[in-house]
Image (cartoon, rainbow, N blue to C red; front, side, top):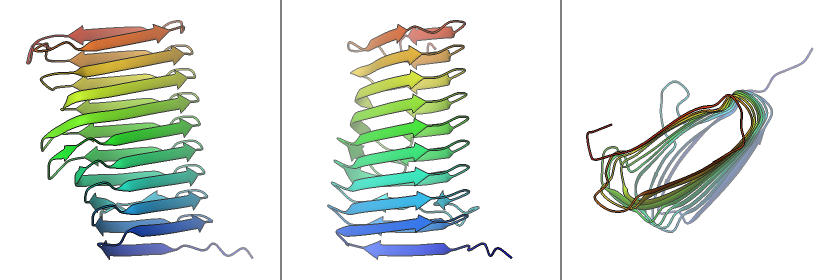
Length: 235
C-alpha cells in the first residue's frame, strides 16, 4: 500500500531578511506572507500538483517591501504559482518551472507603487500558462522582465501599465500564443525572438508620447502576428 503525503505550509513573516523552504513529493502547498525590506526568499518544490499561494483561495503568496530578492523553482507537472508583490522598489523576482501544464499568475504593484523591479521567468515544458501584470492598480516605473519558454502550446498573457519598461521574450516551440499589452506614457520596449511553428502574437503599445520600440525576430511558420503602436485609447 502506497501512502501519499500531503503537506501544507503556512509562513507569515515580518521584517525577516532570509527565508528558504523546499518541498518534495506530491500535492504540497506553500502559503507565504512576507513584509520587510531587503528580504531574501527562496522557494523550491518538486513533484506533481504543487502550489505556491492560493489553494483555492485562502490566498497569499504576498510580498511587500523594498529591495526583495525572490527565487522560485518548481520541477514537476500541474504546479501553480499565485503571487503578488504589493508594494516594492528594487525587487528582483526569478521563477523557474520545468514540467508540463504549469500555471503562473503574478502581479507586481497591485496595492502600492513599485519601481525598478526585475522579473525573470523561465519555463520548459508543454501547455504552460503565464499571466503577468504590473502597474494595473498602482503606479509602476522602470520594469525589466525576461520570459524564456521552451516547449509546445505555451501561452503568455501580459498587461503592463508602466513607464520605462524593457521586455525580452525568447520562445522556442510550437503553437505558442503571446498576448502583450502595455499602457504607459513613455519608454515601452519589446524585444521578441520566436523559433517554432504556429505562434500567435498580439502586441499593443497604446501611447506614443515618447519613443517606444518593438523588435521582433521570427523564424516560425504559420504564425498570426498583429502589432499596434498607437496613441492612448486608439488600440
